[in-house]
Image (cartoon, rainbow, N blue to C red; front, side, top):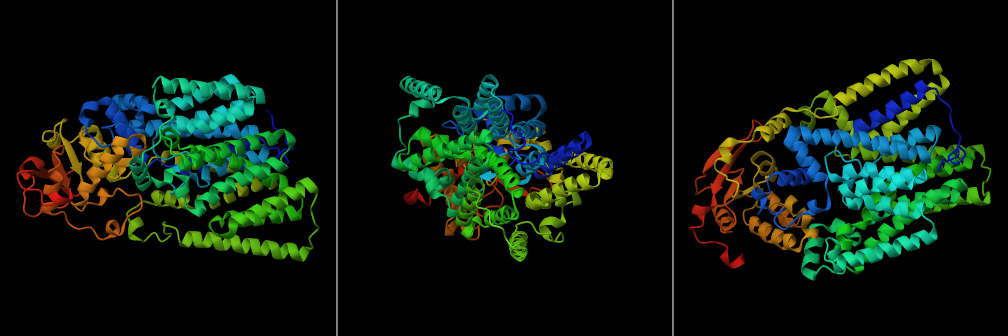
Length: 639
């Protein structure tokens, strides 16, 4: 599908040098907001799954692996495990993430080139890179993640599938979908929906839907996972534990502002579908159908908690909807901006509304989209006096400026570099942190400034090319954060810690206070329990029940990562208490537990070993459980 220039406004001609400059700025924008900071967040779980592939025996009783994990739904961990075996965990993580980031920005450009033209294409690419990429609830998931997961490897081929179907190439679209599904089927799902809606006619869709339904029924009858659970529902206990630990999976537990944010994406697609060039409207209607299907299935999971339906998390179609909504928004702006002063004021007001979705912004956005549609479809375009336009733009600028001011003031990132949290960081790290937090409004403004400078003063193009090239080299060289404690930790992940591995054997199960990544990546040993390890409970009823049991036992020890509930209780938020001997004895009375590692020494007993992993980690104390089981359990009645 070749989108005519008129579909998204005027095409601005540019030289090869100008195009190279804009491409470099887009690449810089991506790198500056997607810096690699090591193995963290869900990157810990995927790295753990890869380690598990290399040595399953040592993790047989680990809470995250004991009853199976989502590792069975992806081939990515096999690739990750092979890379770890060849080059080690730290290098494998950085290398595979870097490859996915290059593929991501290239696939996004390939897709947007089919939807946008000229300046709108470059602006859309920059906005996809720098705008907040989170979707769903609690800010957990985002596209183009800065840590290595199967998701970030599935997103580029999913984008390619959409791009290929827009070009009318079904074979390449389906091939890309197969690769994306092999990496992460949940991420591939919205792309499959788009290919289904856009790439096939009504009769073909009926045939494909019927074939898919019959295939799932056959797989269900054959007992082939995950379709074996197609007609099964979560029992009340499993469901209640899942809601308590992972409420973000269920759309009825989202906040109103999170619902409004998702609704605003649909609103942009709807508005663009009504005002776009006729040959381009079908794209936005199909994107809106993807949104409706995913959210509709998520609502069905609330009414009928089917196991497979909940595990699919169909609301995660929002990652692709967000990317397409950015393109739709740019197209809407380009089309309306050139129409009249009235249209420009409506766009300015829509910007204000988008910045205030958590308050009254969403209903205002609905009204403004309606006025924009009326302007295009019904020629409702009043002539506004000059004084009114000036007052309107003054109010828009004032409200946008106030919103940005308060976002800066209330941000978790301080601009005062003398603060304790920033004083130990180098200048480069500080700049990356500030850009990550505020780049969503700084970078587009700088991008438009570069474009305007090239347009009005072509003589500076050569100098801008040199400047942007040097900037690209600089940010690329600093893409991976390099700090001393991370270097020490990476060295331990490569070499291990022989002092402990001699004591903690592969068949032992250990609880390490806040340190299950140490057990996984340094010792290559199983971890008893932690809040993070309970993440897979929607994929296994046994994991849900066992997570609750083990974490409830750990609560008697008074450690921070014994929390089961997603939302902290008043007890969780109270000041931490030092671990007591009674608590340690109670935990050790679980017969599957062999060792406990704590950050504080427990009075009344002697640790097997006191050690330090690095100059930054502090001291840890290793306690053996076997001797402590000789004492009666002080909490026997409550265990």
